[in-house]
Every structure is written in C-alpha cells, then in structure tokens.
Image (cartoon, rainbow, N blue to C red; front, side, top):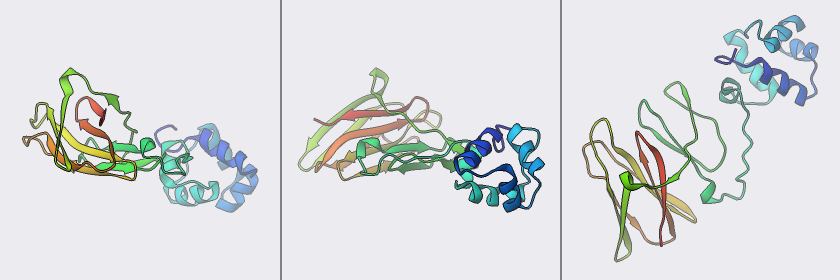
Length: 195
C-alpha cells in the first residue's frame, strides 16, 4: 500500500481526529469493513474517494499520497530554514519557507540538504562595487552541470537559473546576502557563507 495511500496513515489520522471507523465510513458512504481493509492494507480506496478521504482526514492530497503530513515549524520565516527542491525530470527549482510536500512531474520531491562545498565544487566569490560575482569551477555539460545559484539574504533570496553548456556564474546584490547556495545535478545542494 506504500505506493498509493498508506493504511497506517489513514488509521493514524483517523485516530488523531477521534473518529471511529464507522464514523469515517458513514462520512465516506462506504462500509466500516471497507475502512478496516484500507487501514490493514487489504484494500485500496477507489480513486474517486481519495479527495473526500483527504478532506475527512484533514490533510492535502499530496500529503495523503506521500504518506506523511506536514507541520511547518518555520512560522517566524527564518531564511536559514528555507527548503529547496529540484525536479530531476524538468529541472524545476521550487523553494518553500518551511516543511512541505512538493510534487512535480508526477513525483514527490525530496527536500535537499545543503552541504559545505568541496574541491570538486570550488566557489569564488568576489565583491565588485555593490555586487557579488559568484563563479563556480565546474563542468557545464548536458549531463553534469550547476542548475542554479542563489543568494540567501536575511529577508529573502535571489536565484539565477543556469543551463547546461553555459557558465556557472552569477551576480547578486551585496545587501543583506548571508549565504550562496548552488545545486549540482549529480552531487546535490551546497552552501557557502558570505564573509
């Protein structure tokens, strides 16, 4: 059941809402035996019942499909808690201000964890007047490239999308920039503090 809707999640969410199987079954216009089958993995909800099921359980469709609900703890909007996602199919770059379940091209995207840059991902940050010139010494071919470079500020972020066979470089305003992030399509997300 893990590839569709997990029975364990249905049961957990139902119990958290203090709803019995019979009560959920009545709301869904199905039998309580049907709810039991879903929760024990002996059956799947019909696709036409997924949206009402999510609504009755108080979660989004994506959360129900992902098998986990999202609690956003970044209510004060700390920029260091920003989450980044990159679609491996279309290279879409998606950013959220906290925990989320993000889907693109039919797949749920994992949250990217930023690492410190390494020798293979050397970054040169040069201040030129009121801008930072960021250059990454990295292969830029169709199969291995830097997808984006972003300047994370204490009040927002600025992102530059890059394309294979272009240069891995960008300019960002100095004002309030705290970190530079960049994403290698083969090695993941990297973070460099700006001094």
